[in-house]
Every structure is written in C-alpha cells, then in structure tokens.
Image (cartoon, rainbow, N blue to C red; front, side):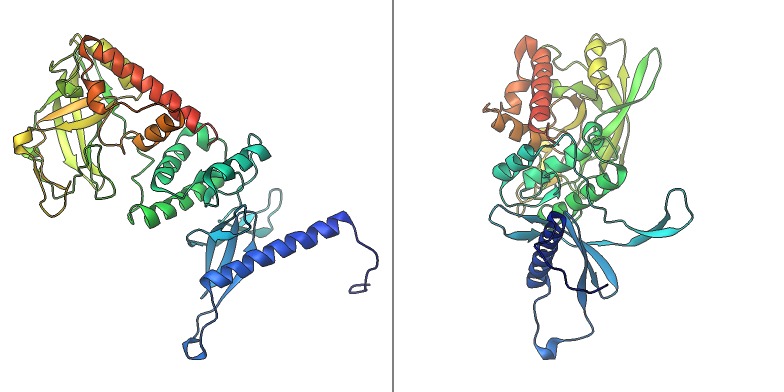
Amino acid sequence: MRGAPRTGSGSADEAKSVGLREQANQIEQAWHGEFDPPRPAMEMGPRWAYVRDVTDDQLIVEEDSRLYSYAYARGLDGAITFGEAVEVRIEYVPVEGTSTPTGSGSAKAIGKRKDVTAADRKRALTEYGNVQFADEKNKKYALDTEAHIRAAWSYINQEKNAAKYDADEVTAIKRRIVGAWKKKIDKEGPPAAGKSLAIKALSEDELGCTVGGYLVLWGGPKAKDLQGDWFTPATELMLEHYKTAPALFHHGLDGAVGGVVIGRRLSAAKDETGVWVEDWLDKSNRYWNMVEPLLKAERLFYSPGSAPHMVKRADDKPGELVRFPVVEDTLTPVPAQYRLRPIEEIKAAYKSASIDMPEVGSAADGGPSGVEALKARVEVEELLIELEGSGG
C-alpha cells in the first residue's frame, strides 16, 4: 500500500537515496542563505524564488518566472560556494524513436569523463583548494584567479580539449568561464574565441602569399600587453598615412633576419576587436622558407611597430596609448600582446616546471642563431603548456 510504514534497516540503495536527498537539502539551504536571505516584512514584495532542481554540479532556481543556473562546489571543509547566476531556459525536444516531447534543460549537467580518475579530482582540490570550476564534475578549469580564468578560456577553445565533452557540455563550460571573466576580469567578456588570432594565409600564388590577422587588440587596465600598454579604439594609429607599411620578422631584432623587409601591408581596418590587417609576403625573399612553416603551423602572430619618439601615453592612465603610429607590421612567434598568444598559460607553465621565464628582449636578441632560438623557445613553451594543461 502507498504510504504504508516500512520496517527494518532498509536497503543500501534506500540509504544512498536518503544521503543524496540530504546533500541536495544542504545545497539548497546554502543557496537560500547566500542569495535569498529572510527580509523584513516591509521589504516583502512580489519577488519570489525557489530551487527547482539540484544536479551534480549546478542548482536551478526559478525567480520571478525566470530560470537561473548556479554552478556550485563543495570544498574539503564542506563549505559550499556558488558561481555567478546564468539565465537558462527549458527546451522541448523529441525523445529518440518517439514523437513525445520531453523537457530538456539547456543547463545540462556535465558528465563524468573516463580519462579523469578520483585521484585526479582529489589532486585538483588539493592544488586549487575550495574554488569554483567550470567543470565541477571533473574538477577542471579553475575560475578562482585571472590567470586561471584566462587559461581555462584558452584550453576549452583548443580542439583536443573540447573533444573530451559533447557540444552541450562545451557550451555550459564556456558559459561559466565567460561569467567568471565578466565578474573578475572584464565586464565585456573574453575576446571572440571562434576566430583564431594567429596569422592566416588567405590566398597564394607563385609570387607571394596574402596573410591576415589582428595587428592590434583593444585592451584596458586589465588587458595590457607585456610592456604594460594597451590600445583603445581612440588610439591615434595613423593607418591612413601608412597604407603600405613594411612587413618585418620580429621587428627586425633577430640577428639572422635583421631588418629585411619580407612583405608589405595591403589593408588595415578597425572592428570591435581591434585592427585587422592583411599583408602580402614575397615568396622570392630568402627567408620565406623560414616563415612558411611557422605560418602553416599557426605559430606566427602580428605585433605593431612604431617609432618611440612618436608614441604618446595618457598622463592620467599609465599604459593607455594615446598615439601609436603603426609604421610596420611584424610577424613574430612571441607577440607582446598576450591575448594573441596565451602568455598567462606560458608563465604558469614555466612556474610549474620551475624554469625562469626569459625576457622577451633576450629571446629577440639572439644573435646569428636568433631564428632557431625563437623556434626552440616556442616549441618549449608549447610543450610546457600542454604538460600544464594535460588534465584539461
């Protein structure tokens, strides 16, 4: 009979069910304590909120007829922390093999990865502590610091890492990283990840190759380059005066290549991300055989060059570039703009490997073997990054 009392100690499944319900209650109570505390009677209004569901790594709340997902994590001390609220919706999709609709929340719980062991998850908690992860189930992509958030965004946008999840899981992870980025780094969110920032070959013939990429990225106080500078859409670049600027390799600082011109600028245009340029590279140049493999491997990035006496910075905002006439387009494996290449990951990788990261200038001034030194450094950095993020 339904509702009839049961006797005995009950099965292991029943005990487990009670334990899970208790955990869900604890998580729900923690959420109410942080986000929906009791209010005086005079403040009570039409606003209302209640927890609709608790999954392995998120809590779904309905508030004023809207649904929100909160990622949560339980630390080693049992404390529960919550991520930023993300609005979600319920969608109805056909069940496979039938025409009967069923609810399928877009705030999907991330599944357990086969390549992640309990020891891996424990190690992550030991290493990062009681922090929020974009993938709470597998304890991947820590979101506690700016460096970790930047690294998480870069890792999940690498094909080999995204392939460890299905499309919905990748979307959920990216959504949480974006939320953390907006909260801790920049309210505008990260730069578009769907668009690779490495220089790309656009067209090619027997004489030359037309390439394109972002020469400049708009930045801010929290998005500076390695020199501590940043560009804004208002920065005076004088692009109209340098329509055919020369293309160089590493600002002409490499001991082997020097200031040899390897091509010329064809066009430059501003958009919401920065300045997109296209250059024509001369295949007859004796250094084309060195540039071509780096280009195909997507290991070349743009770096703008100017004359020091023409550069002006804001007096009230140290690092903000007021004037920076772009007189050359440099192709380099080590750009100063870290958002072109994941420099935060590089720093973290060097640190984890107990290796002192060399200054950019020391890599550039490598003497006659400068090109090989730069190539070798890039290879080492890529290896270090892969080792550091192999769990991603």
